[in-house]
Length: 224
Image 1 (tube, rainbow, N blue to C red):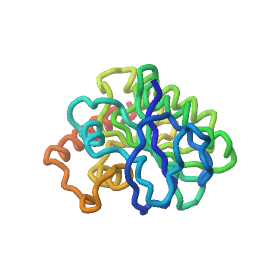
Image 2: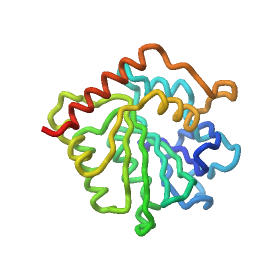
Image 3: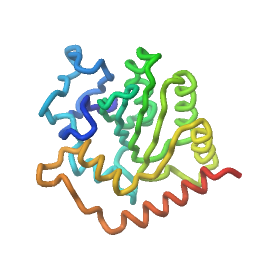
Image 4: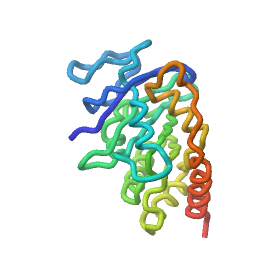
């Protein structure tokens, strides 16, 4: 089974819409036509690539178990104010983080001399095994800086997972719990909301859970 992908290349404050969930798309050069069979390149007001609102809420609320791990990401090259935006999911064989590393890094591999900043908005924080693969990727790509924002912590009582997060943080990866501003940003950037739904009021239980997970993450990353 292939992970699901959508694609976007635009400025930070532009509006975006809906996602195409039929194929795994590799990231390709900005404004370059994708090969036949991988779906159309998203341009202008083509909103087919975005997540449906119910899919976003089922997988990014900070309570309960999500249907499937989702990874929303954006890539910034150097000092450019333009961003690559895309998303992927887990599947039967790989977690979402591994699907990103194996399917979305063609352009990162090609632009080895251009500083690259990658931001992930994840359903869960990475597990210990994925943390090891992420660290290995960053060691092989020293021009890449990674920031991770997660809605929940994945099995935070696991020593293996906790060590993986600490290793990433010690290697320079910035790891955070998604705040209310992050939910609003993802809603406006990655979700196919209606024009009159650009703003929303998060449920009352979001804030205490965000505070709880943030404190928990802080204790994991705190030096001994």
